Image 1 (tube, rainbow, N blue to C red):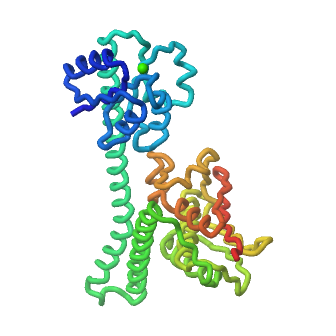
Image 2: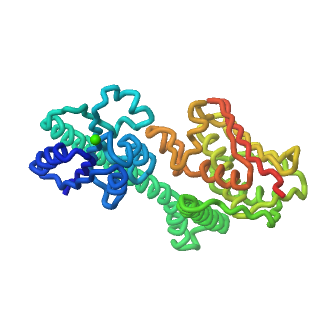
Image 3: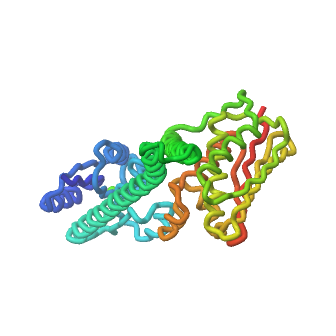
Length: 367
Ligand code: CA
C-alpha cells in the first residue's frame, strides 16, 4: 500500500490533508514535530512520499529535507513542502530538485491531491525505467559473456574433434598443432573466467598488493607473449621485446600476469584490425625513483581521443556496432588499471587513430 507521511503541526490542516488523502486510498502516517518527523521518514519501510511543513517545532522542514537527501537510503523519497514563505527558489538551493515539489499556504486541497498523484506517478515511471535498464544491461552482459566463452570453447572442441578421429590419418605435426590449438583455447577460457571472478571480487574488496614476492620480469613477459602468440597464431605478429637482464619487480605473480596478458592482448586486437599492424614492441625501462615502466607500442587501429579514458571503465564496450569487432568483455583495461593502482602504479594510454597505441604500465618501487 502506498504510504504518505504527513509532517504538519497545525491540527486543522493535518486533518484536512489526512481526510483527503485517505479518501484517495493512501495509508497515512501523521507526525506533528520536526524531530519525530525525521525519525518517521528514516524508518523502514520508507514512506512513498512526504508532505513536509516548513515551519515546525523542533526541526525546520528544510533541515529534515537536507538530511534525508544526504543519505543514500532516503535520498530518493519525494518531498512536497508546505510553506507560508513565497521566496521558495533560494530556500531550495542545495536540494536535488528532481525529488522536490512545494505548495504555498494557503493552498487548495485538490491541488495537493493532484501533486501527490503526479509525484507517485513520476516515481513509478522512474523506477520502471531503472528496472528495465538493469534488465537490458544484465541480458546484454550475459549474452556478451556467453559469446566470449563460446569462441575459445569451440576452438577446443573442434581441435579435440580432429584428434579423436582416426589418428592414423593425421601426421605427427598435425596432431601437435591440434594439441596446441586445444591448449590455446583452454588457456583463453581460463583467462576469461579469471577475469569474471576477479571483477566480481573487485566489486567487494580491494586488490591486496603482495610486495614481498619478487617476480622475474623477463620470464613473466616471455610466458605471456608465448600464450598471446599461440592465441593469435594465424596473425603472425612479431613481438620485439627489450627487458634488462635479471630485472625483478615486487608483485603478486598472478597480478603481473593479468596486466601483461591484457595489455598484450589489447595490442593484438588493435593490430588485428589494421593492415599495418603486426609489429608489437615491448620495452621495460627503469623509473627514476625505483620500479619500472613497461611500454607496449602497437601499430594498430588506435583509439579515438574521446574514448581513451572511457576504455578503462568496467564492462566498457566501444560502441554497439564495434563491439564484436573489438571483441572482449570490456574488462581488460579496467582490471589492469585497478591492479596497477593497488601497487601505486598506473596504466595509461596514448593513441592516435590509424597510427597506433602506446600503453604504459608503471610499477614504482614501494618500500
Ligand atoms: Ca507549521
